[in-house]
Image: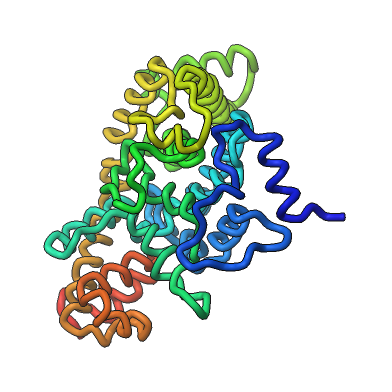
Length: 384
């Protein structure tokens, strides 16, 4: 007989740590729904996210390189899948709720604009006088308002705990404003895992894509201590390994080192904090899921290297600049003539206002759709 929801919930109480977030203890959904017979609430959240249109669109959104510039380069979707995998692994090792950590990870970039962080900065600039734009809070808008799948409510009606993880997705890149609905000082350990798994993923995999594209070299990386010590160890342990395998295996070992460090450091932090419940964790002023001081310092050096040599490399950055200029023209074209937007967006104009409706519409676009819209609507900077 397959396990039903009640049995799965009982297993969580039996197998997970006392400070893990249990499905049966969820604060629930904004719109009450009957429980599912076979799946826990967090499993349903995960499945709703995967089946959303916003999730599918991540396949055609930029991670670092403009979408379509290389078959092997990561997109926002493959990045998200990698974050979800690392989140599950860390949660499992710490006896936390894997389903919740995975769901938050899968949803954390649903609100990301086309053209990566350059696109986000452009939308924030365009929305300066209208509430601004921040992609983590936009992810929350996607799952609470913008997805249209259910007859009785907008959004996906996810649990409070999954939405909390989106509202509090803090990384070195991401610092969303705090919302009154999620007024605890910290988030669940599962949400903290998704935050750090995001960093682990883009440190290592942006590095991989930069090497693959030839924008950074092994010689340049000699100045990055965490890379060079790992690279030398791989080549010492596997003499005669070819260059590509050596590079790929070094990145694999970097991820292993990062994840192992996070698990060991976090386990010690949790023990020292003497927390007994998920809400004990939320009341703390600092997160418990973290790197060691040594690895945090090493990662800062790697991050600085990536900014200098990859993120602002003209070859990678120039296409983004041209693309976001097109985004700006498209925004102004919609403002001048809202009928150019989709019908569902036009219906929302009276509800959210012209500029927010335009922002929601553009933020949901894939790279290629945004560029196609620009070609369709704008010509030489003028509306057709």
